[in-house]
Length: 52
Image (cartoon, rainbow, N blue to C red; front, side):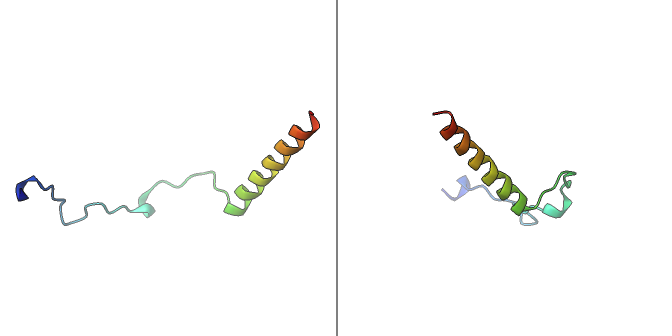
């Protein structure tokens, strides 16, 4: 049964280097993303209650 095992090469199996990835031209701080999300939720609630 030991021949059914799959072995990864010992020189880097599963290692990911994030510094080598291409950086996006469009970057935002996490605080801005949360603020936009909160604004969208509030606008959605306001519009929902105004249409009743």
